[in-house]
Length: 318
Image (cartoon, rainbow, N blue to C red; front, side, top):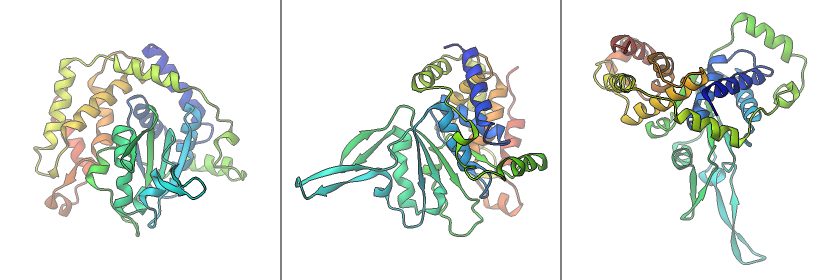
């Protein structure tokens, strides 16, 4: 598959999702980058902003088996990955697989459950496998987590630990729609009972597993020249040098940013990465990996402001 075909594929997926979801173009673009670079994405926003419908429509369009887990305070790790249960008829233990055995997993309201249960996703997201009673069970090559969470200011939430956050390629802030988009939502969705069913909106599959694999192979062949590698490295290292941040990004963040930039370039129809690819993706890739210093918090600084200042401070290759 060529990068031009990857670009056409991305356009077809965007058009299909737009049948059900009004707006959210930037979020869809990040989900495409995550899919083609083998990453996961965390969506944060208030209830009712189409996060669940977007994930379901995305899975339907790219032909991935869709599974959903509603995270609650009483959810246990075994409820996610499954367990060996004793069968009294055969006097043997039988593995009962949990809902994590799917291709696109929607982890809905992931910060409503305690850290012990959140950690059950760590191995699955990093290694695409889970371990039950000492036995490793593989997940699919296209396994992808789309997690949603409510803003941290709301009651009854458990902040995700840094190790968990680092497994997400992107954290996207899903805001309320514009006035025009909201009017279109009210007009289109207000008269439908099955508004949450993508098939009811005419959303159809555009790709399959082999197509995704071919696109990922094309992305891996996108050229990353030394100047852009140096630019990515300097950006990541700068996050560890500014006084507004107590904790900067790790080398893994740099490797993820380079891989995501390749996918972004391919979706733009190019077989080479330019600095603008890196600049476009850096805020969503870094915002959940950086911790503000106490003085920056007191002064009302936001992580997004610090990231933007770093992007402006680090000179991009010409």
